Image 1 (cartoon, protein in one colour):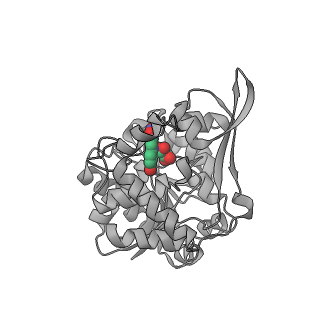
Image 2: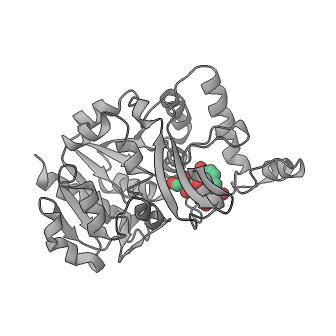
Length: 316
Ligand code: FO1
């Protein structure tokens, strides 16, 4: 069975850990969002790719959901002693090694897809991890500050401002000119089906779909998604702040309606949201309700298994 998954960070990584447990023999390709990529101190950090790689490779900090287990912050402390920031972006020493190597390989001329493959040789995530594009795409968020309107890098809004300042606009800068990374369109065309994990519909899945060619390739497939919204609130992160910026309500049904029946064939919602099963605005999308909290790997595996079963049932 060949499965292709579009992935953001923590929610996707935990779902993928469940998917690997649920269907260990499946050939899984993960297309990761790179709109969150950030370059503090000149170091190329790819938060979503790294979160998937560390989680599946057994190196993730389980408490944070991102970054390395057993981390220390000596380098950041030394940089702060020089008055060099950003101090608000918690780069750990172990994690920095990944970014130093990524910087070297990129400087040698390797594209991000080849660099990611090289990094995964160490972590053996058990999936093929591809960046959505080798071309730079950066998610920018426009906010109104006391100093006037400002366009911020996504991480500055998300981590420094905790997404507490309302976003007026969220834009994937460079997406329109970006090409899908090698293997991305093939993985979508050759898959038995495509899954959307419970990732942010705007800044994770939405940014991947903004790369020309990807949405069309996804729409041609059977697609089953898992709602990142339970009971009117994001399970993790601040997806509500992102949905508000594009005028979509924070509900499991509204997110499915936002993707629409042209993209989604099946949608899993939590039992708290079972009214979505018969929602008229979701005509053309097969909606099923079940427990969706990924409390541990076993619970994630059950959710992943339900997504796989629904996709097999709906396969065109
Ligand atoms: N998230 C935070 O909330 N605070 C941080 O200091 C932080 C640092 C960080 C460093 C490396 C990395 O790969 C991820 C990091 N994240 C941090 C997570 C990340 O900013 C976001 O959660 C994702 O970009 C959203 O998917």
